Amino acid sequence: MSESLISFRAVSKRFDGAEQFAVKDLSFDIVAGELVAVVGKTGCGKSTMFNLLAGLIEPTSGEVRVEGRDPYREFDALRGRIAVVFQSDRLLPWRTAIDNVAYGLELLKRPEEERRRIARDWLARLGLSAHEGAYPHALSGGMRQRVSIARAFAVDPDILLADEPFSALDELTAETLRGEFGKLVRDTGKTGLFITHSINEALALGDRILVFRPPAQIALEARASRDASERERMKQAILAAMTAGAPQTETVE
Image 1 (cartoon, one colour):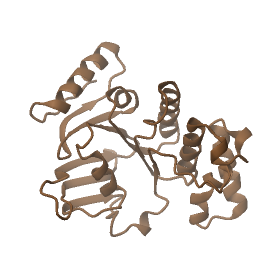
Image 2 (image 1 turned 90 degrees about the vertical axis):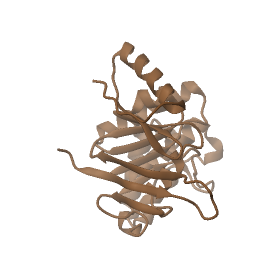
Image 3 (image 1 turned 60 degrees about the horizontal axis):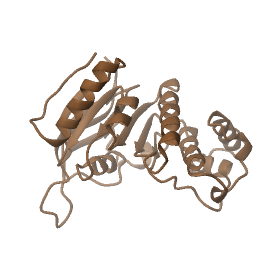
């Protein structure tokens, strides 16, 4: 059996002053090499789960483990082991593309020559060799997101987290980047968790799909299928699970 790199055990989160839980009794595992898509409507708890996993907030109860560690209490120990691609590119405007890609390596105290070599290689893999000296304001939205993806991969993390990274892009650009991102995760053997509100995106990317309903409860769990008729059936099942019905588990081979 593959090693579980990410584990949630009966995790709940209620923010101070809130009447309702943002996450309640959430349990799931992600094993090494999986790319899991989490899909759900706005307000279902996806982002809170994401922040718990990234170690940005602490659960009210339950246990989150990443590579056996508590990501909140052992945040520094996981530095460089987890990389994040956000909805916005979050590039530093005063840094060129190559310097933005190298930023994570700089934080990890890697030598300058090594940083630039790795950053240049990742820019090339994402089709941006001709733009390594460009500042973010001179790049298109899609190009800036390519730089942010290169920055995430450059630190050679074990786990890649992506929070709706293509939702601000036009659909053609998003479709291209979606395919490239999924291929890179699989080609490099990374473990990935991808948050989206798009059913089509979840089906296109995920080896496994978790469908959330408030408060971050798994309404459906499914294995993705490449068969067109099965994908359409699963699309309808995901839509139904997002809106109504009892939680269920379904596997599609």
